[in-house]
Length: 129
Figure 1 (spheres, rainbow, N blue to C red):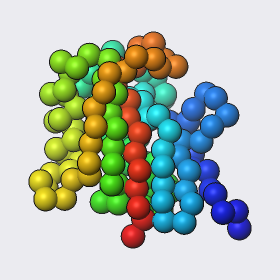
Figure 2 (tube, rainbow, N blue to C red; figure 1 turned 135 degrees about the vertical axis):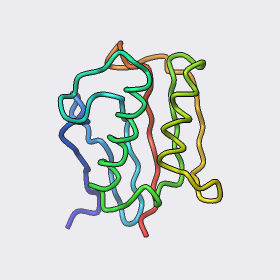
Figure 3 (cartoon, helix red, strand yellow; figure 1 turned 90 degrees about the vertical axis):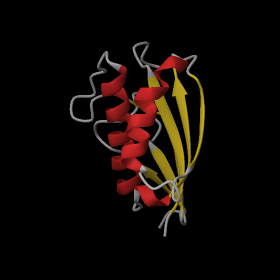
């Protein structure tokens, strides 16, 4: 068995030849996860929909890797417009409702993306088990 395992999901698949995430042992680290529709890969225009899709794509990637959202230890979020933090926080609270059990999070400006219509993206680190 390979030491490193690539993790790919259909709706969030990258156009470049890179996986959505990679797992070595009990550690999963993702690449960029967008707010594209997980079924069609289309990019919606509304930040609220992109934020919801991003968290849905995140969940699918982490679960495909053999973990759960409870295993996420760090999330970095990239916002094209920092004033869209409310859309991010609404979905954040849905996925991580318990204040005592949330991953670390850092939010920064989204300055470049493969899809110019992307308003939000993230990446994560998870420790399985």
